[in-house]
Amino acid sequence: MARICCFIDTLTLRQHIQQYFAHTDDNLQMSSASLLNRAVRTKVQQFTPDLILMELSKSIDNPHIFFFLRSDCTTRQVPIIVFSNSVRLAEEAHILGADAHLPRDFTASQFHLLLRRFLQNKLRASAA
Image (tube, rainbow, N blue to C red; front, top):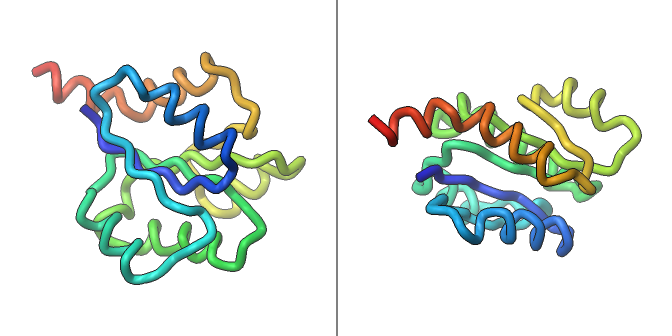
């Protein structure tokens, strides 16, 4: 069972992700991609995620969330997959230092391949 922290604002993206994980044992924690405050920080630190899914948006706090995730000792090494419809998605993901990126209109197979890639160590540990 993986712990996956999601920072998503777009309703359809949120629904796709929730639907994907609906029939799994994975634990999702959903948060806004537009708001960073002490309560959000504490919630993420206590959750200790295995994977982070984050929508890139134009909100002021959006980059601060990413920088918090990369600077906090609890999440520093956790893989981050970013979502965006930006034509510069690959460039933005690279500049931020994201581990992977997907367009908001990803296919289930694209998403599944990335999840397997980043969660395979977690899955191996659970099976042992």
